[in-house]
Amino acid sequence: MYFFLLNLALLDLGCITTTVPKSMANSLWDTRDISYAGCAAQLFLFFFLASAEYSLLTIMSYDRYVAICKPLHYGTLLGSRACVHMAAAAWATGFLNALLHTANTFSLPLCKGNALDQFFCEIPQILKLSCSHSYLRELGLLVVSVWLAFGCFLFIVVSYVQILRAVLRIPSEQGRHKAFSTCLPHLAVVSLYVSTGMFAHLKPPSISSPSLDLVVSVLYSVVPPAVNPLIYSMRNQELKNAVWKLTTGFLLNL
Image (cartoon, rainbow, N blue to C red; front, side):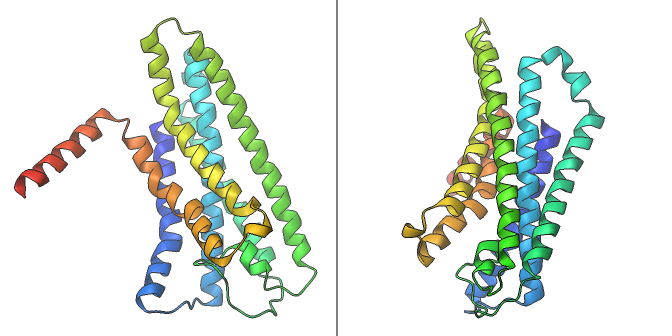
């Protein structure tokens, strides 16, 4: 679990640094400029890291399923080599997915200006600038990606249904609490990640507006990576004690 959390932390850090520093720099310099190559790089990196993170969250649901439903086989099914292979598969999936979408998106002719109603480069906003019917090809790829993401979501749901059934069969209340405590952080992260992403891209056009799109984009691109470390770390008693000592020491020095 901690190996996967390390990978998740790296992906969260990458997601934040891909979009936020450039946006902050633009705000400080009162500009909204970004180069064509910079826009392509930003789109690729964000799509790569977000796709890899979603794949990793799917793998982590399998990790929790094996740990709770098949604890005696955990060492066999999720040894160190298997964990490395699964993490590498998540990173590779994100890389190939981002490479395909970025190459396809930036091969389109853009003839409707060069202004994006967003604080970072994302595919839906770029497609609005295209005047070619070739954008339907990218929309088709996005539909395929959505269906693959939905398949991962179903896998996570099925895993947690099995986990819930196994936990309810645990006779002791302490055992059930321990099992739930190992799953709730992951479930909270998945819920936050999926709900914000779905609302951002599946909201009705009738309620769409530049200001709402900006707020929603912050919800799915900035909030989950920023909140994920807090969700996972706060169940660690040693870390909570360290934060408490740091906070009380700071207040006493005031």
